[in-house]
Image 1 (cartoon, rainbow, N blue to C red):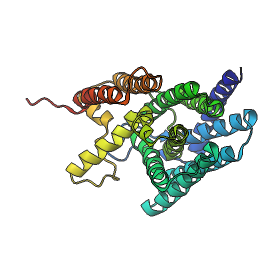
Image 2 (image 1 turned 90 degrees about the horizontal axis):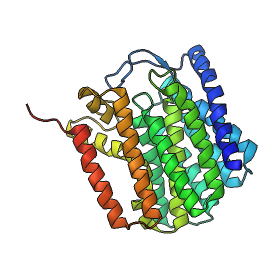
Image 3 (image 1 turned 180 degrees about the horizontal axis):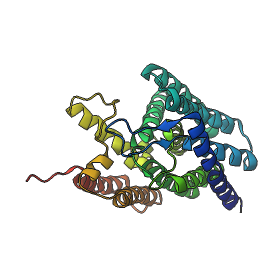
Length: 327
């Protein structure tokens, strides 16, 4: 019963908070203006969708879940990431300041992971986890370039994580994942084409931190570093986008951190793909990756088979998105 309550409370609260954030964004002029080639929209769109998601997450969590120390640190760490993004949405932070604030948020989440799992990590595990957290925080930010893309990939990743929690019996983690999923789905109602509101950096950094936290808790609880080769695949579409942007921008002589129209959605748009078709491909790829991870977790096949499936899917993705036949 509690699983339904937390999910629908978060969903309904996000449906209520999001239009309020639309009005607030207009009043405070926190708006995304399409002023670079990387932007796919043509008219200004309010930010602050991430604030609606965070408010829904906090409210539902505080109502239904016992506030364990790790949970308080989790809310503080994700709140810091959300605040960092909010400041960047309004004033545009310089790279150094953003890096420091993101780092502080990631360190807070690592402390929460340590408290939640009761594990004292080795130096390699700690370093790898911090790098992964920082990577996925920025990865969700990078993928957020078209209506519904970041929220869709995040929601599908959350579904995979919920499946892993059900298999492993992680009850408190399951409830927190359901709350996050409900909040994201509530926001998505207003983010579909043509979007009335965007996540903004506040939302993308928030969701990146949340996904990183959930993935790392699953990895740490497994007590096997090799699970770094399987569990992060639930966010495979998001992580692949980062890799491809680094490769493409480096090849073109563009610093990887600078915005450019080389996201996968831009390549599909150049192929005359519709928004619906692009979202369909994104969702299908994400669902396939998550089903593969869950199948592996249920011991239907081993790690080698999982990676064979992933490599096959990767080849299909690269062909569909990036292949341009020569005339």
